[in-house]
Length: 227
Ligand code: TIU
Image (cartoon, protein in one colour):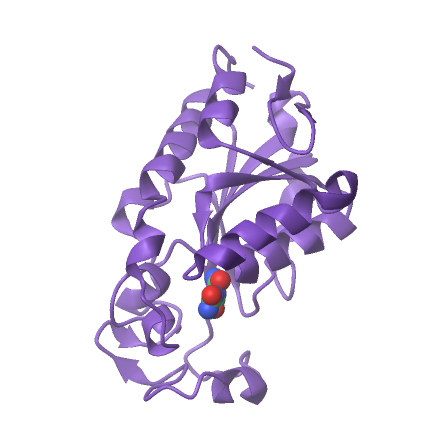
């Protein structure tokens, strides 16, 4: 197995694999399917589906290697006590967070639209982090879950690149995690924001971390044994 991943702005050194986690951010029906939060914010949601095959491949490899997988979900309690009014009032669509939509109440935990898409359904033993904000560290158990497992390195995927993905990567970077964003396993409703995010992460010698393709990650992990 390789000891690094071919990445931008330079190779990403791999730690002992048990210290590496795959983070899958918010691959929820609310963002990927019509009738959810993404669409009520005015977005064309079809672009996000394109990354599902890449995320599936990475997930399959992590499962085969017995490595840590973390799924996050952007969601709020049914009583909205964890949703600041500033967030609820934003968007100015016909519906807002907590309202009933075609897939149930928008962005509310347990509603059909709020679940992870079937192709990426978590398996027992995988970590699920519900989060009320864009970043996965804010008001969640993520730090505790990472520390419990001795995780130091994060491969980050999911949606949307410049919102929850970038916020989470910046939060992780400030906490000392070595972060790599998988460039074709993350998507935005806005292709120019996807490109800008990759560029700003890797600028200045990797100020926030690294980017690499799914293929580069899979190639580096080829032949890796049980952690
Ligand atoms: N609107 C948008 O691009 N994203 C979000 O609201 N949440 C996530 O990115 N998950």
